[in-house]
Length: 209
Image 1 (cartoon, rainbow, N blue to C red):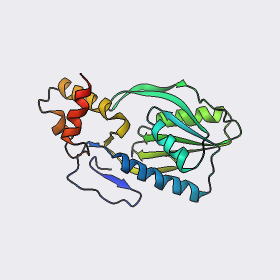
Image 2 (image 1 turned 180 degrees about the horizontal axis):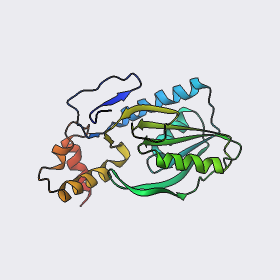
Image 3 (image 1 turned 90 degrees about the vertical axis):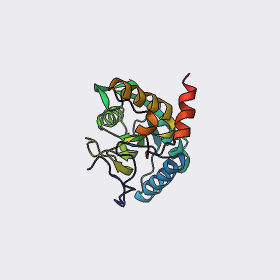
């Protein structure tokens, strides 16, 4: 898939003027994706007994999915993989096992993106070892390179996704990368067309003083 292409289930090509490297969905866009995913899960007949959010990116969508599926049985687990934007450790590690009993239960794993897919595969195997009867995985985005394909996903993209709950963290990393690569133009130019406005980027950076 081309770097600048982002598609939903309808494979609709988005505005070509959008940023070729980054996409930053709004809170409303994310919520809309989760509503669509919840509807898809319900229509599939899958009724999870436990919803597991994978830290950290999976926590916000897992909480919303708990509401949309009217299931208060929400647990979490932590898999650490990334060091920087597009830079990964050699292998993902579970640093916090699942916090709820899943043995003999139907489990829905929720994460923000299936990027390399390795961390999701580790999470899946961990839950299987814990005795989960059935496991399905749900993500907002799927990257074409992922070695693990979720059962449910809203969009496919090859861009780096900047979610609403990680904007400052991502902006700081991108700014740091620009400096280390010797690029003289600013972060606002780098993120032009991504969905993050210049004024918002300035406000966020003002917090980091």
